[in-house]
Image 1: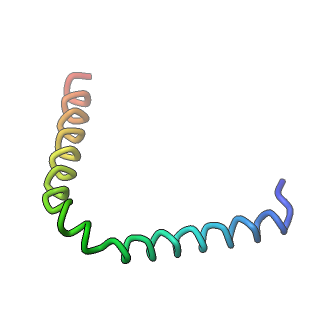
Image 2: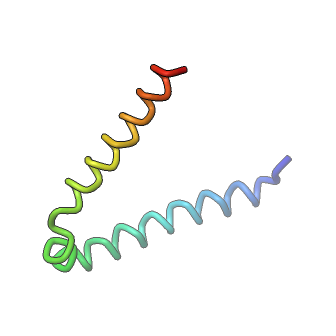
Length: 61
């Protein structure tokens, strides 16, 4: 379905994309610590909310 060249391109693209994302995150780490201090609690609350909705759906179904 795909040629070898397309697989090689996809592999290089994924590796390079992840490397650039890691480099960008590390470069802005001080800003992330300063401005996004409580974001993990918001993420945990959102995941808990989705889990509760899933449980309610499962229970009522």
